[in-house]
Length: 94
Image (cartoon, rainbow, N blue to C red; front, side):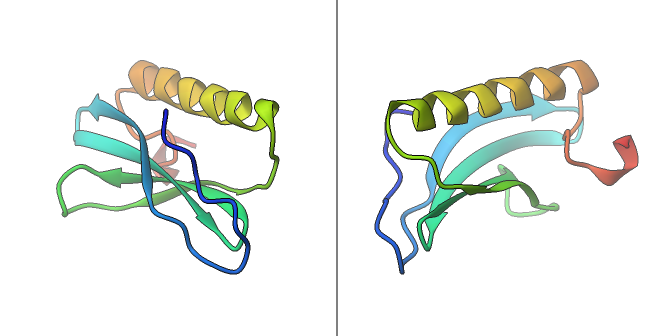
């Protein structure tokens, strides 16, 4: 998570890989991307096939706490994936 997300409003920043994790259905990647000043976190299959999930949108915080909050979100998500051995955002787990 050393890369920073573009903070300029009115544009889409580069997609930044936040983490990778394995589950029974295959390896997954968490990405962060700033769109119009708001960070969106998505969960996509490592390979091109499979469903992508929106994990969170609306992270607008800036400053030192913003990165800590994003790291906490990613860590919690990875813990859930490990326990479930599945994508935490998958509807059939609710």
